[in-house]
Length: 558
Image (cartoon, rainbow, N blue to C red):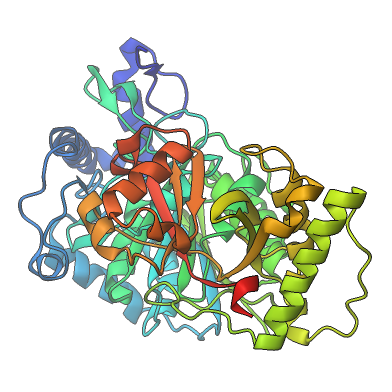
């Protein structure tokens, strides 16, 4: 299929308007350029911007051969690196000068610490205009221990459906490289997210060539140097919003949150209004954000409206609070007051009443649930009674669980496996916890006996030959890996249950399957086929793996 022609810019761009994109881009970096006194800066900015854009086009698809010393010592094999698009235009391209500039911003900020920080809204104009406001937000991160930053930017340069997930290994700024989080692939498999779509676009010089939503985008990039100056050893998820439902985006992002993950929504506020008018508009927008009033964020309130709404949806879901840290506009910093751009820094934080985020772990959990012999007996008797009555009477038994041990009332993922003379006769379950084991096991016993499409329903004359095995699962954890070989190295046969997801398809094997398929390559190839994909599809891009562990027990063991 031929790639779709995508017009680069804030709106549809005519062939004769190839300079319009960079004119609008320069106004984002430097609102004062719309007046007559910015001529010399305009020339420098456009040259630097064009060169940065062309450098990205030349380098985005080749191996990065010059990682920084720090990055090289930590991750020496970055193959795909997102190069800076606006260094030298929105912020200084020289690392020493850039670092000094950010330090000066921090020195000018007297910030009251916000405890239990979970997210920030920060502006994305040129540092000379919005850097001080951004510093009010990012100073909150100094001394913090975030391992992952989910950076939500708004597309200013491409029109596309969905939310682009940066599909590269590292993100470069003049301050060095930031590794990309494994959570990127996990998000990329969930709507409305897509792994960095590629399309044919009109470049700033008027030529047509391949690009992605990241190619010329500044709104995420300008945040990264602030993150590099404040956080240590973090990984990045780089998102660029096209046309997407923020509620759906929030729901997907929620699956990747833990207590070591920070959310950043990048946005400026009103654009190019007189000073007083802009302040009134921005005050209304800020009040809507701080009150989590989703309907109060108008189409023209903020260019990063969708990232902001996504963060607000998450705040409402988790019960987070907000705090305005700073608000000003370009007329307060380095520009005139006849045509300004508004900026705000807003913190989102959790309270005692907020819904708790999962605790981050350095590695997937290895602990298995522990049931006593008596608890196992109760669950197996429930499964046996359920199978017998479903097969002979066509319904599940009525069970009073009021006297069950408390552990059997806590939601767990579980599978029920039926075998006959040592051969599989049915196996159905749920990976994620949705009901107490006593309830889930009854339901899965019925499904294994009558609804496993691989087998005919169990008949009454088979019941005496059927043996029942129960598997109780831990919650699946994302298994990060950098290559197919790395994935193979990280799998633990006979311990790991595996959930394999490939391009929207998925399948799982319980750890017991390793007994039939002990070879790791054959195990993954068979699981790939079970998901409806070619055997080697697990080696390709877009593959995500979650692992879990089980406690399994069967009737013959009691």
